[in-house]
Image (cartoon, helix red, strand yellow):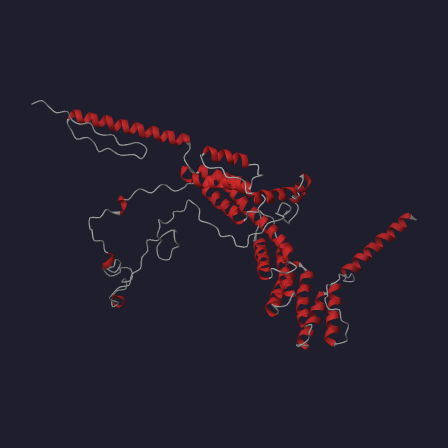
Length: 456
């Protein structure tokens, strides 16, 4: 008896699943129209809504398209266009979501003043939010979700969807910040300190609500320290931000000690930042070991560490220029940004244009006097050349010299200086001219000994 009953129960469950997959299960559609009329456009709209609720999306779209084409002045015209987009959204899949996004954008274009426009924009944000990948994968959908959610907050700030969208934006920026932070950690471990500093600077400046912003600042300060003494100010700035903006961080005390060793002022903790960080730590749902082990089998990113408060960044990420790239000294060449990299290519307009017809290579050789205007010609022809200027300091490198290499270079320079001094003394005693002393940046050139006066 019991096996037969169990067999019947399994058959009923299979039948229920089959009926659900065939579209007989109803998923209620949020229809704001409540009045009951027998108008043909209303009948078509209700029929299409019933098909959407029972997952008959293709039939529903045909009915709604008939309504739009037949009753072009119907009061349900806007609702029908929004329902077509909702049918694609419910159908899902990459093709369905792409069609839904296009339909929602068309609805916003045709009906920008309706309340449902904010709902359409919220659905577009949700489309990319649901397709967002983990931080170590392609951030295409995360970037699109950030743009669409930011657009809703800027275009419809008083909408009922604004609070939920703001939290989605924090989650998306957590994933984008983790993407940049992972690249910075990779460069830091590889010893590419300028590249690591560039990525980590973008993280801490663009995403201050990032759950690991204090870790990024600590690694940023270490990167600048390992690049040499010229970047000590930048390293001190990073440590100062840890003490001031992230007072509850595990690196706060170590950052204070770093500032004291650098003989820099140690700031007080910001009360607003202290309260925000305390709230985040109290309301943070950190994943346990089992959850972390199961996360590797999931395609969606884990956003439980995302901030629960604070205003998300409303600007796009603009990658900076690494410190290893040479910068312009005050002025930039035409067409270059201020302080950017200049160019040695110049353009001039010749006075005689006939040479363009007679000489094929006239464009390569401008006429004499065209490159330098007479007013800009230097008055002093004995001016020092550009090579006589002060030598520029070496740029940051990904492979700085270690202390052992520095000591070895200094030792070689000292030995070279001693040999030059001995050669100069020997040449002075023999009465011949001393060899030219070769200066070295590590050690000063040896001064030749003066020849003693001979007795007459």
